[in-house]
Image (cartoon, rainbow, N blue to C red):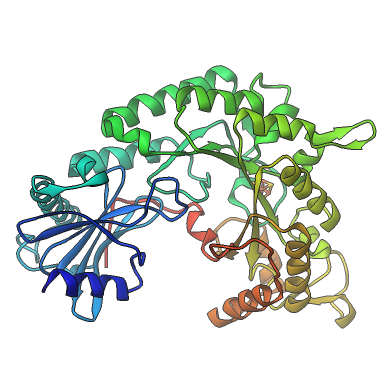
Length: 451
Ligand code: SF4
């Protein structure tokens, strides 16, 4: 296939961004880059094309996907999710780049595919290159596996790292949460903040291990995340000398090139952090922003007070709104997380008889959620499609029909569309509502899954 045909096919597929700049070529291989600069919100990646394949690489050098290109469609061979887990499609394997397809294990197939991609990358990097193409180099299979194992070892099984990409440096500042939210895996693990010494040990471990694998490419990881269920809770916990400001300061000291630093926050702790004798002030949060914290993820989950109470999140619509406004007044970008489908077709108010009067419908919940978004105007809204995770208290409310669960996948979509249709956001540019937050929830991580 000609270069033009292959470029057209990958752009038409919708899998790749529409802006692909050619930055190199050699011997029938072409190299493209998909974002103008590393500060873009869009995940930048290299796309290398051969006669009938497109292979994608993160800016850190990990192979992130391989696709068979047909003149009018794209078939996924292997792809990687935000938690660095590969999914391999045995039936789509390209001819000629894997040996003994029938008997090879998924790990062996993946190793061969990465090896093939690595050789192709070497070929193109020996050709004509311009701009960022001059820095193009990729990781070996061993380095990718080492990075995967490292990332796995740097987080607990219940940790959530939102917006995780290849460019995220996350450093653990505590464990668990232990609050009563009935749907959250962190509720089952008691809160344990790290001390300054423990946090420094995590920073050093991350810096050294990541540096060993990525070398200078580590400086392309420009997004930092302080991995804790509620960063401002550090300041309220007498067991630790680590504060939110100290954690941000240390992140900056170890990784001075970070453009973004974010973490989770709860409405309760944002209010406590901002409280004075005469009400609330943004001053403390402003100081935190000056230190370098520029993103906070707030789990609103639902803005419906009765729904919130049933989910164990005993904080009102107004308190959540006040907390959001304090964060925003301090210039910190607010990312608000909402659950879709968690209250199903509707629910009976907590501790009330199951009568018609006590039933709250999904539309009432979604309308209240949209009202909150319209009032708060967050920088970004994340929809998390409710996932049934084992061992959580919410299962009881669903089994006893206190919450009437959805019966069909289409009902989640209907709720999401309804919620979106009520939202009026003033911010322009990239769609500020994202539908995939649930992909960051804890799950069994594996280097390869064969499909
Ligand atoms: S939703 Fe947030 S506050 Fe509730 S248990 Fe989970 S991490 Fe804690």
